[in-house]
Length: 166
Image 1: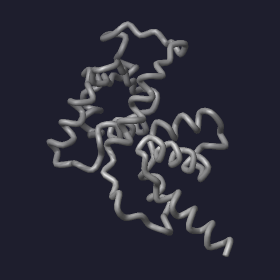
Image 2 (image 1 turned 180 degrees about the vertical axis):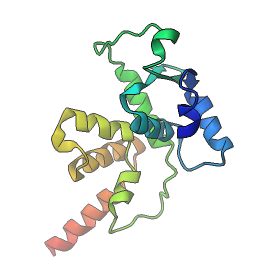
Image 3 (image 1 turned 90 degrees about the vertical axis):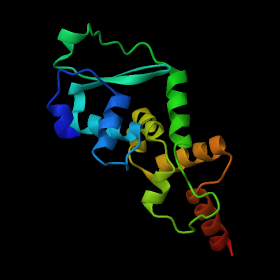
Image 4 (image 1 turned 60 degrees about the vertical axis):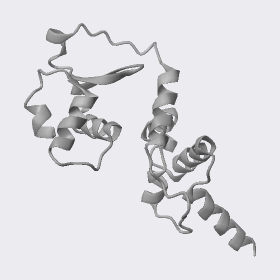
């Protein structure tokens, strides 16, 4: 995907097209949102993702954008509804086994239940929440509230607390 996108930097991509190309190459591991995140991690600030309610995100390279779009940097407008919808969609995309919980989860188990966007928001709120167990716990609590089910991390914590009090 990196080669495909790098070779077509003047192309205006949309998230469906990107994910379709990804699956055409036989890849199925990453969801559309995780694929976009990986591309953003790779290309950094040169890749822009333009999102709108109810439409696929558009991906464009900042270095090529002036010829294709008129861009204005504005951080004033924040669409909280879109952020919340994205976080809820990340939770609903997970196919968690709701009948089996690990009593000693690994970090990846706790992270799998998390929303990437919510973890980013927590890290932006405070550097103390960037890649920390506290951020994972906050995310797992929110996951539990939204899904109305406990997470592996919460069950593990409850079991460990009960064992320690005995």
